[in-house]
Amino acid sequence: MDFHLSSKRPQSSDAGVVVVGIYDDRVLSSAAAEIDEASQGKLKALMDSGDLPSRLGATNLIHGLAGVSSPRVLVVGLGEQRKMDCARFQRALRDSGKVLRGVATSSAHSFLPEIDVPGRDALWRAEQTMLSTDHACYRYKRTYKTAPEGSKLTELHIPAGGLPSNLPARTQALAAGIRLTRELGNLPPNICNPAYLAEEADHMADRHSSVASEVHSRAEMESLGMGALLAVGQGSVNEPKLIVMKYQGAPRDQKPVVLVGKGVTFDSGGLSLKPGPGMEEMKFDMCGAATVFGVMEAVASMALPINLVGIVAAVENMPDGRSYRPSDVVTTMSGLTVEVLNTDAEGRLILCDALTYAKRFEPTTLVDIATLTGACVIALGSHATGLMSRDQELSDELRAAGERIMDRAWPLPLWDDYQSQLESGFADMANLGGKYAGAITAGCFLSRFTEGQRWAHLDIAGSAWDSGRKGNATGRPVGLLVEWLRSQAS
Image 1 (cartoon, rainbow, N blue to C red):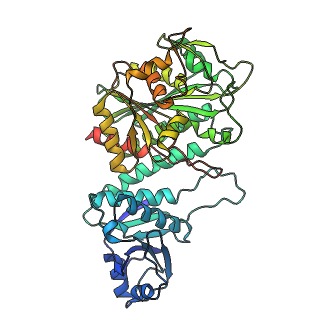
Image 2: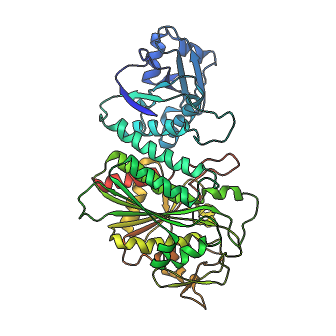
Image 3: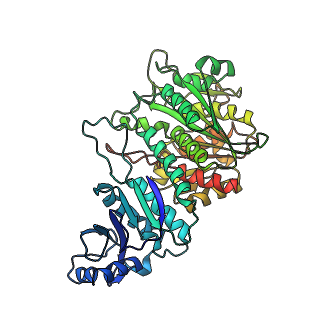
């Protein structure tokens, strides 16, 4: 979707639909008041008759208002004015987006950014309006439906109101990164396998001259000593890949930020087979990898003045005569050994080797992103990404970035008290910490491979996709990470 700043007022906009808001008690937003005046009091008359409800969540599409240039006016209920806050503003954006997705027009002009939201400035309101509308109008491109659905909306205009001229382009870049992450996450696993992700990295390098890609094969990973990663992938006919994308936006001697994404393109659980119901959602187990691709796309499009390395550990975890087994002991790239207690605790095994590999880039900061544990979903649900780090400053930076962009994360402790749960009688550690604090013990496992690094772990098992048969990838936490990288660049 293309974003534009416009100086036109709602009554004179020639967009296919104009979006305005109304509050309870017949209170009109400034844009709605202008529409009401131009139409000789039509909005207030409809409110008086009860045909234009103002409760939060209500939407009404009005056609052919006299005195208004646009053929359609979408009126969004905002509820009580004194209760307006970030959550209610986002609710209004989502509600308007649902309607815009189905309107038979290519352009819309939203005046919702003019609504006052305590504690948030015009820049935030504008960015949220663009991102939320783009998110609502997203349609999975590679759908295999015989009659695919699609939104016709391709342009969104918002009031210029002193906003920086580069805001639309910057937000388009972020939206494009989020869409790429969603598209990769939504692809079926018979299409999106490790080789497909490797090809996607090459496409990334073709699109952006600032990005270079390289892909390591099974043989190369064997020479690197990646025994844990290779163990996970050995039961699949789809060969594992270690994918490295390098973005250069700063001088070569400037140390990079490194992102590591979990790319299990389908997770059957291996020999520790998952239950059948819900297993189809395990195509989303590569959303950490998809996030790395989305962040790289956004950062390269924005031309941020940083150096960034994206590493994707891509495997498929399948049951087979060659599969690794519970009670196997594997040797990681770091030299540490791991007793496998459960083959469905595979994400940490591929990440530990990828994190060890990442150290060769001498990163200023190292962040891994993974749909790692069901325990994190139990703890935080779908609203917050789990955030773990022993670096309080880094944890605060990431959390603040999430709050700014409304892609929120919440910290969980990485105290040494939990490390004893990973003890093994047969190896340096086990790959499972037992029944309790599963998200935290998974983070503790990864922490053993990031000693001396400024490192954070993002568990996105609850936030990366909407559960259910019709659930979609959400594109999180691309927004959080790009917002954080922007702050690092500045």
